[in-house]
Image 1: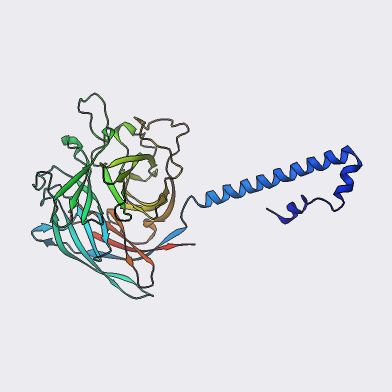
Image 2: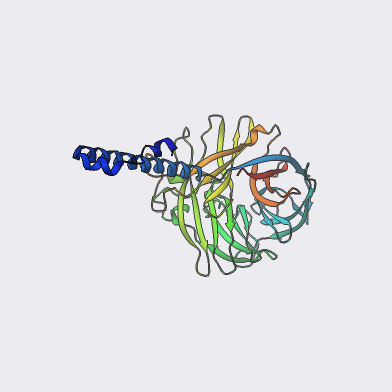
Length: 401
């Protein structure tokens, strides 16, 4: 609000004499005062709108540091590969990476990884990645998963010595997706998170619905809290549900789920529409991971693409605060009217880094770098193909305050 504008609203020093002269002056001053006050409120309103707009996204940036390739190898008679999700154990300074092997090359599993960083404030670097352990997942009967019976994709660590793992399911085989909790040390099954019916195939076969084959719960993240308080668990479908599919010329309408995990049964408390980017050159684009960056509904998402020129990836910041709840909508097709999707903003196009990108699928915050800034790790799924690599990318996450 300008000082000149405020000065115009200050009454003249001889106001008491003026307002007694004529009713005309009284009316004139009253109208002037109303106009001035209206201007003030409009100015304050504009200020509030500007501030709200500024608060939509957290001011941050990503700085690429280096890439590391984990050599092809076997560990305890399992091929190390298909690394689709990653999570960081700050207490032990270790990472856990889920393999998306459908129990075909070895039983479904996750690996414990030790990442070594060069502790140089001026030139930090990811120097080495070492596999130190493998943990096989067991179902509720205590057995490892049968061949082709699971498609693990996402992993999130709790503070209770357990991990949540998401499976896309195997739609063409009638195997539903799941999000289950497993013991960190033994891989034993602990509990299941309920999946809304709209994410599963219609058991009667009357309605086309549910996750598309290979486009289910790829992304998974967790926010812990004080001991005894509930966790917040977040996931998103890689692409649209069958009933939400749009023409290929339009971006996919994925669904983002927000759960509360407390002393009672896990519960969905919100669902939002996440708009996947539209690209004329990429044949396939989907959300492969997401990462909460605060407790205020701000996240980073990793969107991976595949087209004629190979793999690509972009990191977006998105905010859920103003998004409409979609949990009661049977379909997200067509004109959505006043429905508000999740808002998103591009943070970094990894295709501009000048390096070869592989099939990037997992993302996690790591340890602090030597200069005190926050590290971020992205990992690739090599699909167990010799032509692809197990790629680790190191970034510095900076808050631009």
